[in-house]
Amino acid sequence: MGNRQEILLTGAGGQGLILASIVLAQAAVNDNKNVVQTQSYGPEARGGASMAGVIIDIDTIEYPKVVNPTVLLCLNQASFNKFLPKIKKVGECVVIVDSTFVSGPFRDEYKVKSYPITRMAKEKIGKEVVANMLALGVLNAATNLIDRDIFRESIFELAPKGSGELNQQAFDLGYRLYEQGSGQGMEESAQTPQ
Amino acid sequence: MPETKPVLMQGNEACAEGAISAGVRFYAGYPITPSTEVAEKMAARLPDIGGVFIQMEDEIASMAAVIGASIGGMRTLTATSGPGFSLKQENIGYAIMAEIPCVIVNVQRMGPSTGVPTAPSQGDVMQARWGTHGDHPVIVFSPASVYETYYLTIAAVNLSQKLRQPVILLLDEVVGHMREKVTIPKDSKLMVEKASDNVPADWKPYDDKGLAPLVPFGFGHYYHVTGLFHDQYGFPTGDPPQVERSLDRIHEKLLKYRDEVVLTNYIGHKEPRVVIITYGCTVRSARAVVKKAYWNNRMPVGLLSLQTLWPFPDKEVREVARKADVIIVPEMNMGQIVGEVERHVKDEAEVVPLNRYDGEMISPDQISELMGRWLS
Image (cartoon, rainbow over all chains, first blue to last red; front, side, top):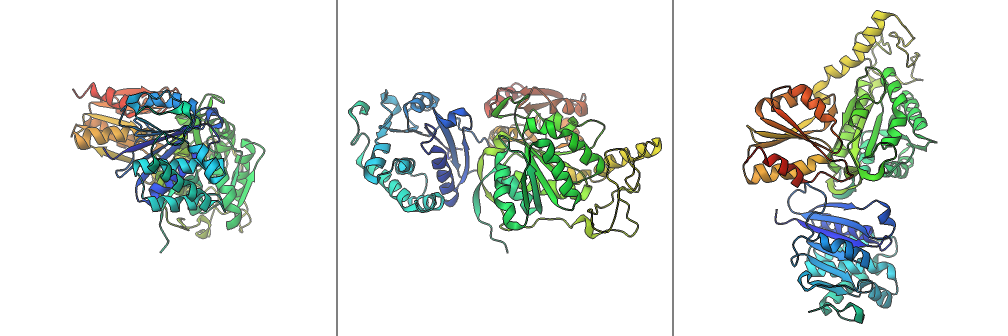
């Protein structure tokens, strides 16, 4: 079962993580993979540290919950503090954080990759709400989980009417941000130790 | 040929889609976490296909509305969670007694009372069996995936019609809320024939001879409907032989169709030493364990998953008990189906419960750790 990818998308309620997880899961379906998506439904989904899990596999997926994350995305400090310790294979799990809100501490062994996700969404696209799709761009660029074109189409499919292209732009910007490398254009307080 | 494209779907949505495929055109309910998406989907879909969606003032009224629509000839569904399921019990008993088909969905959450609304649980197994008073027959299904939810909802609607018997779908928060890839035929109509299409000339609503098809009100036959014990025409009676005959009859219709109603699935070793018996979302954890232990490591283990909880799959359980030394029964409650397993296994095997009731799923590790004690 070495194919099993467990992706944890975390942040504050309202940052669009649940939608991001559904888009990721839909993209996996469109990419002919098996997928299970779950999310936190408690009061934390309305603020604090909200969480959505996506499991992608070629094999059928039995246990539907994330036990051993292979990818962790943190869009705020509270979720970074809460979910980083859930990583079992330190160093093997891809950790992506939004430097707009997460300032560390980044211990070397976690190999945290930090990008100014929300700030770039605001500055380059003019809309903070597309930060979730930008984050998916970074995530997919870093992991290559889903075919890029299929992912773009899935975003168009699920984006609210009229916002499809804007969300696709954000996704592409995520790729560019990843290609520029971790730590580029970010606040001084959120430097990634190399 | 209907288009079948894989889609991403939530368990609760699959329940609504299954109901619509099976011809359900009436939904009455009162929304409650974690079942609300069933109502949302029905509200979005039913008006476009000539159906009726009503949000009632509470769960008791929802159940009454569903019974009323059923006797008027519609296929009906209502969805709720534990607290609402408690309220529906009186009317569920009425539907069983008056032999009115309907499907009741209970997406279980952590109880008792309002409990933890967003936490999964399997605590309503015995309530589904004995929640309403009296010696009543009951059919309860418990799906383990989005796909199973779709098909068991269709089975529930059709069996309910065929047997004139309310059917309960016991989901849990995990199955209800998770999204999975499923392949569902587009615009499918998986309906059995309408019961009223086949009415014998000497039709009686509650024929002593056995199961009579339901003829909806307003379709040429006039009869009495009551929760009191009744004669063949539906009129109240306290006559002891008739009372006994009536109660026997509503139980016998389930016995007669037992093999269509009782659905289970065994996977694993031919001669297992340890067998896991479970249902609902816990099947997922158990399957992960058996996959690893049997498929990868050829250990003598197996899994009997129960899609039907009631009538209890006694034959199937006894059969695995004859082969196994140990039967592990994981449940997300303090031990409900395990008692029933013990009752049928008797001394054939050792029955070991595995219970979790903190609002989290039982993990594969918990099961394999317990199982390891008999495999070393």
